[in-house]
Length: 637
Image 1: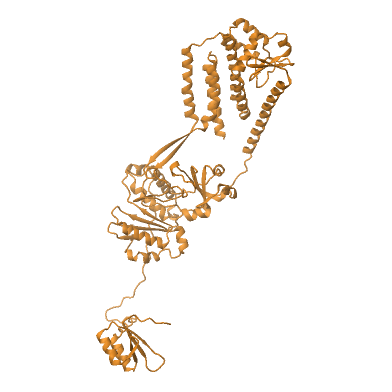
Image 2 (image 1 turned 60 degrees about the vertical axis):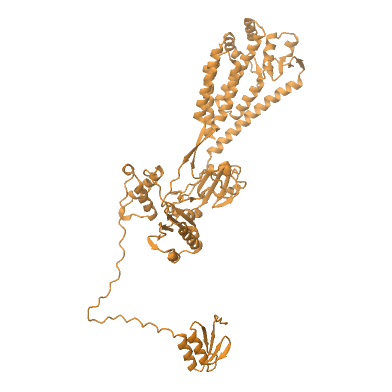
């Protein structure tokens, strides 16, 4: 609001200075009337004008992107200081509006009272109101206020009546009411008072011009004005003859401006307004991804970190949380302009009143085009707010990323190990064993790195396995496109990370794998010139050596090892025929397809078909029971 008022003041200053220097002393009063009113309106509108520039950018696919791990002590804590200045200024402004508003209404009431309580005479297109007070003649709309005694004695010259008649016919009171209302709203702005004086003076120029065009003699009219002018306080909201402006009015009466000069001075206004518009309007630049400009779906919250497009994916890199301020919270309460999500859930804008500013640690906002808005979310902007806990869960990786590379031969590399598709599920089960499936679904992210020649079926199979594993997101990352070095954003990211590690003490350096991997990748795509201008690549301490394996005892030739010999392998199972013969020796009872048979018949059956199903049980008697069947035998408990 403060910036807006400053810009309004600057516009008013430019417009009134131009008027004083170029237009005021010229005989082009109708144009000057239009200019003064238009300037007041333009000064109020120009600072609120917003020019939007759309820049189409080509998204850059990234092979590996990371979100910095945010510790709880890194989350900013907001301490709201009590702001006494803002309410004090608003209180002063409100008192000024009340005082000037009361004065404005009081003057209207006085004029209305004079019209009601005094006799009136209809004359031509105006009404003469005859007053007992000795006031200078003045006009309000089509009411002309005259002293009753002088009017009845015919002591008021015809030229004065024509002058006031011109005010009434040309509706100068409309301009006066407009500038008085502007004064109520901008009572603290000195340029409003300069405009008010200029408008009223120009009204006198117009009335003088009308009188002279009626045939009044110039010198005689000037004498009459001197006789009727007075330094007494004039009636507010009315046009009256005033002594202070007489000298300038006399000079203007004698001056004639050529049509060429009028056209030239009128045309000078255009570049002046254009300059004000360029200097004091607002501008906004919106970046649009070419691949997303035709998107028609915007029902999801804007904070989708993955934006998958065919064979590539784009990620936002969040190094620090983007916390909102008090002004942001205030404007987001407008449900007609903003659709709101808190921690990923769509929420009523009124819910913001139930939160403290310090509870929100991050937000993102996006503009939605008309063709992408839905009936459920017709607002032009969508905002996502995140509390501390949700931000940590959603935007920190804690090294829980699964990177799977698939080449054109459908070979799979998982975290640096070659794995088959059939063995992928078992391999994943050994990772992140400290997490439950619910925890995996919140922090583990899967990245499938593919080439243009990678079979789609292989990608689909791996994606299904990752989904079953419980990844919160599964992202397909395409081949890196050729580019001439790193982009400006990538250079800024590299410099931030490299500077951080260069400032660390090597002996006490704390290294985050995600940051180092990203820094190494960005450094690898930089050109030689970019590397010269960029932050030097940090000297990182070497990785610790793996622990030595335990020593083994060497056995010399001829020595006997103390290690016990491995147990002998189990004996192979008996064949079905041997089993039946053994049961026959134990006098078992044999059954084939539910019918009793002899042991010899059972042996013959097995000899002819050793794929028959056999079930042997001890029935509690001395003789076991052997059942033989072609169909599978179902054992009932």
